[in-house]
Length: 224
Image (cartoon, rainbow, N blue to C red; front, side, top):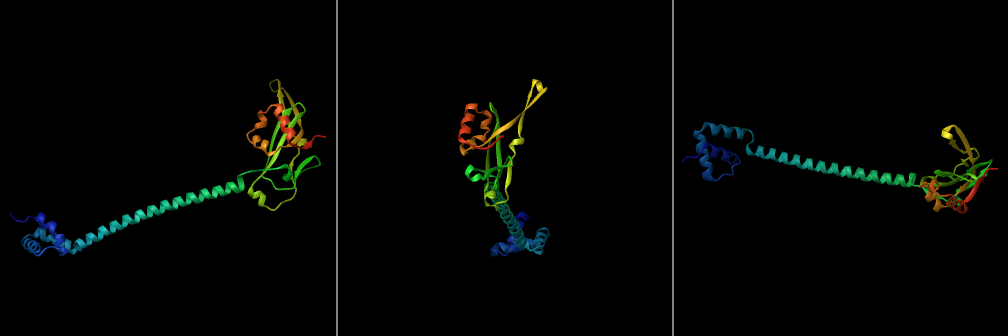
């Protein structure tokens, strides 16, 4: 049984690369001398660079895949870096500009001038919670600061609140009657109650509990 064209065509790339044994090389040459189809395949492969071109193309594909993997890994690394940097920035931003710290009365710089409560220091926020009691509306307040406020140059005196102009409006008889109750006193609460105020504690506390807060707080303003 002779060698088929299919076998010869499988051997042609190796023949072009000159890696066949002497016997196999002669076998291919003998077949090519009498087979125009296989000879055409040989000429086509040889003119195109043979198996070296195929190998080069395969190498290019491998390089492309490697580059794609490297690019993907780099993109993932950049994405992770962006997330980490953003998270760090947000943490720093929160810690410096947002996170509040209670200011004690001793450090508040609070004083009253012309019935207006003022302060001599920077602060971030005034926390004000008002409750109606038997002796009128009582305001429970405290100041908070941030790292940013603490490190800013101290500015001019700032007004905190004019409690003399504040009141609570009550509606009665389905809204037909309106009554305004003025703020009578304002207290600066200690830190333990300031934490409760952040959870709206005075809104739910009983009058007895509010009296305890008043006893523990500093009276900073009273209606004349």
